Length: 249
Ligand code: MF3
Ligand code: CO
Image (cartoon, rainbow, N blue to C red; front, side, top):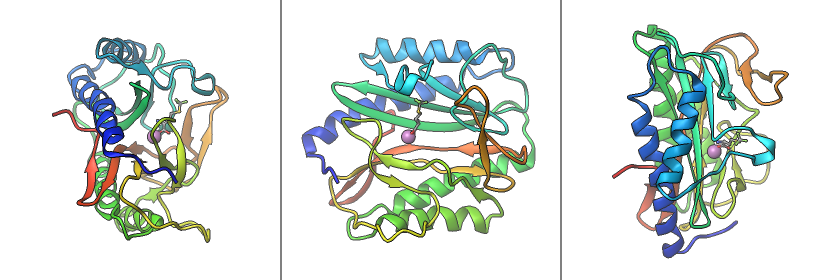
């Protein structure tokens, strides 16, 4: 597993800061009537203006700079002509490449007045991410993160998506290790060490955990049609504990 130097982590702070600032800015644009393509164009322009490149564009043939997944869409929704509506749950995932290093984060935004259930889903998913982050400490093991996320989600009556996972990140968007949001039956459960940089990203369904990919080859949706939320931070494990790199400060 790759350990990053302090100098590398400083560059990754800058890469991830770009992602976080754009997701902050996006909050003001996510209004009824705007299309997901317009949101994607905004993010791509901002990435380039801040000196980065869109990490997702062209990744395994992916056709846009962001993933925008609405309501029962879990992840990898392709921006297009669909218009945001009042009451929608809009999950936005964004990646940048900056000075040779990647940044990656996601958030779910509620549009206007959303249901109590949707509010709880967003809250529990973000809390699950923070439970995982708190557990990302040198000396713990990888699946301690997974367990912290899974137990928070399930004790709140929701389910964790299994088909997609968090990941190491650095000079590649996806590096070892994979970081599942549930405890898998796998003997490979490495110790966490200072210098590891991970993207933690719980995807949480209001119904059961099953997802399927639509015929477009990308968009993952819940099989039962239930709502889904997604939060992701890129973090560094330091001697002093976890540091969130996807912050706009
Ligand atoms: N953000 C996703 C992740 O965290 C990656 C999106 S893959 C792409 O792993 F193809 F859509 F870019
Ligand atoms: Co990611």
